[in-house]
Length: 189
Ligand code: GLN
Image (tube, rainbow, N blue to C red; front, top):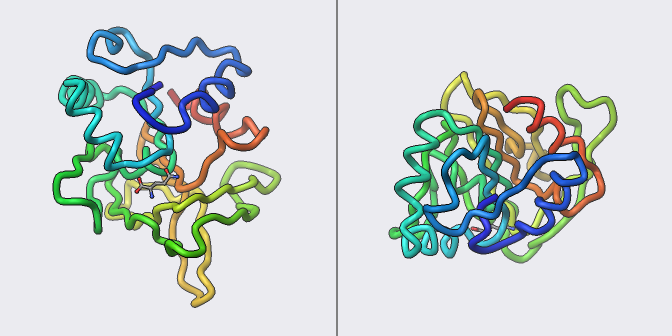
């Protein structure tokens, strides 16, 4: 669990409820022997800056490039993306999933909303909690879009994508009591 900034505690609780062993990662020494990394929601520019100042960005990038499974939620989705369409120039990302993301894709004013999401492979809708959320654009056919949100204009934006063992969501499953996405990630490590 990357625990530099953001909602790492809520994710930790969710994974621990499922019996997973969670280690907080704040510096390069915390990285060896991880089975997976979770990058929580928060502020992607701040997390990027803290990854650099703690010298954690490069070693984590190397692990990811070598196939470390990853879950990124919200800011974590931005950090795992290949391209940030409107990031800050000094903002870095890991490029582990072939999506382009637009920060605050749902508007800065209507900052937060909740909506039931139909997710592929889940029987019942999932409560999607969106907070200044990014929207994704799949750049390669190998990116599976598992859920999307429809704008009033009729346009759709992917909000849950997977490419091999990298999973990203625009929304915050850790802020609900629903553990199905955390379970899904553990099953796809
Ligand atoms: N808008 C934030 C960013 O750009 C993400 C918001 C969130 O993680 N809840 O990093």
